[in-house]
Image 1 (cartoon, rainbow, N blue to C red):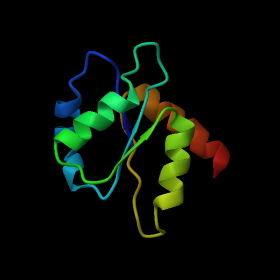
Image 2: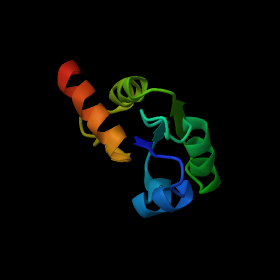
Image 3: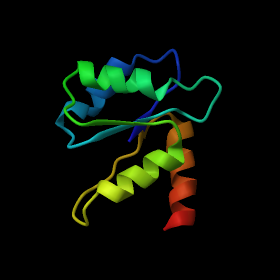
Amino acid sequence: MVGALRGRDPQMLLSALRADEFDVVICCTAPSPRGLAANDLGSAAKQMGCEQVVVCETIEAACDKALSIAREEDAVLVAGSLYVVGSARTYLRRKL
């Protein structure tokens, strides 16, 4: 699960994460006025070769999607903007 702020290079972020090696990349919009649109991040993920890309507009929807597709033995990585990581952490603590 990844989200970023505008002004960041989405290709560089996804490349640093080696996102093309993930089973699924869930892109979300960072909860900030400067949040990069989830669709733009999803397009960048597809361009770099990520095979399964899911676009969610909110952190909550992205977390719910990640939990719905992750198996017990899977890991879910939340990365990108601290706005995304912090919001996901807060949401998941309440939910789990």
